[in-house]
Length: 146
Image (cartoon, rainbow, N blue to C red):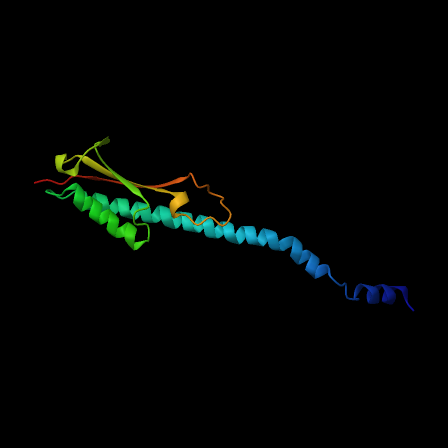
């Protein structure tokens, strides 16, 4: 038999178990990639929700005659719609200092800050982000007046 044909026939023989071995090496990395993608994607969802709630709170604070309860209601509407009710904290700042919306005058900057702890709102299949990480959303708008 021709040596080339013999070599060709040997190379075409089925090699048993190599595919399973290769899959066993690749599968853990694939799982890490998938779960990491899910965790970071959910982190960005939480961050986007906090930013949206802060924006709605600031928008509720800028018309004349509004109060802190209007801001709290606007923020709670967004956060409870996302399933984060009671798992966040909010703060209102007038010109960079903690204050009440009722005390703001026309032209003051009102900042609403929403903070969630990743340990209470996050999904951590791999715990890549860490439970002590805070997810923060802020929005600043100017108080309107007559």
